[in-house]
Length: 93
Image (cartoon, rainbow, N blue to C red; front, side):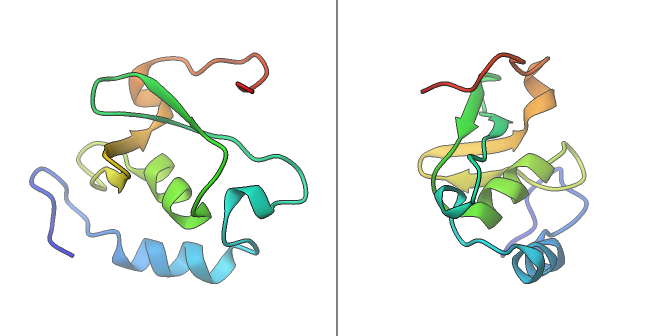
């Protein structure tokens, strides 16, 4: 993993910590629905409800300067607060 330009930390150790303590591999495996709100490179909110749980947590932890955005599919995703106030209503269906 290369250090992303503008990021101070490489998320390798954070990834190891997250993977060690998550009890699910995929978000859809959770006993209750889990939705992780992140921001894409255009500033739009993205709601993750399926897929790799560790990647979703790392994307949510990706705060400018500290950790680089997490690439999921074609998007580079980061902390949901970066795009403004996340929606507080029920998650999309």
